[in-house]
Image 1 (tube, rainbow, N blue to C red):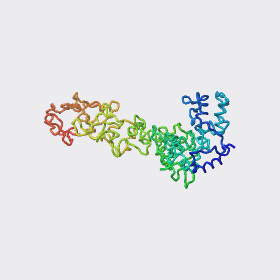
Image 2: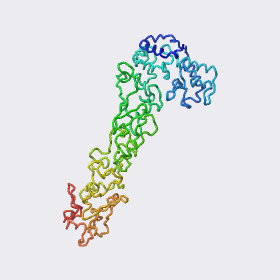
Image 3: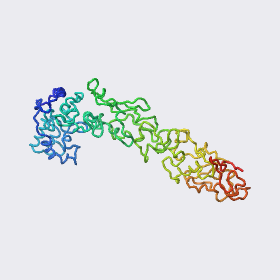
Image 4: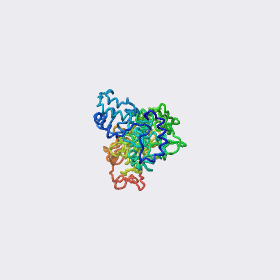
Length: 545
């Protein structure tokens, strides 16, 4: 009787034999009634498949995603675990194709080659080469009774028998075959049991399947690899991760094999505890997908774990774009510049468990401004061009760079927020509000009504020739609507009031004679006085004599 018809007996014998396989160097006879299969895959089956099948199922062309250019490729199952060739099965798709009985244009191959394939599949359990110790299906992941990974799992990964032949470090031992020749990451590496050469996350799963429609595979790779919205999440974000393979609770507890699914443990979102429904393959209320309550978010809840590629985490689903309370501005990088590049999420600082702002808590610098100044440059988009109205003459005002007055504080033109969510800060679209009712003490002096036109980047204010007194000045040099981004000439001497002002009752004068009446504000040379601390009586809201 073929051992394939006696799986329970065979598995029991193999498990008992694992700790005692010490005589491996001398070899043992064919065992348990298995067929004698002395040809290696490379000598017999491989050339047959290469001759008749490789044209459609080779490295350069793999119809049906099936290849025959290597042993592992030839025995590989479909991603969902269904076999293309099953040990002991005379009706395997491979044999049907060889006989010309499989739809899709397959033509029967010569009878002698069919016999080679039949022997390999039905009698030899897809054996890759002659064995002296191992059973025929030892290298076939689809063989649920004989594959060494499955046998070792049933033995709770007792590797004593393996070490007897392959050495304590599995580097070859008396067998002269290193386990690392297949398991390059090491026999005890995580991806020996699940995952691939790329990482330890499925595919494949513990049954070596790779279809994302399986709950054991699903969206693992989406999470553990760098993506456009996040960097790779470590395994411990969702699972209790062992420090050593044999740790209690990993694959064993009290020396007994754990057969149930891996527990899923994720931080909860705003609505309560995280919930994982294995039967439905859904997760609900994870912090990652529902971090806070947001009326603008199109949150998908629950998330379908196996709906890979179905846009389960599209932009705007976890939080609104923009979130509620942010106003209509969709330019996330204006506040979250570290997290965005060219308007796209910068994955290391996106979906990382915290809100990353361009400015540290309590500071404006970073969102706009630079160095120790909150005034642009830089603007909220990271730009420094002074011809942009978002940069313009901010520093000229705030730092009094042209020495025509004391520094003009931010609150002369804007309401300065006390925190990021203060009214008038980020609750509206661009541009920033200029001269709202609660700002602009100096700009409103002498009855002036300050205004700003973002279409032309021009303003009117007391500072630039408006108000009851200065509005009477008919000097041709006066510019009452200077362009904020027009450069230094917009506030040159004589543009705010004439020299002298052409106002009824004002005496004629020259620049050097201004000091006759205004010696506290102007020197005899006609220079405006600004002291070492930046104070000045020029342009302070009153006329100083």
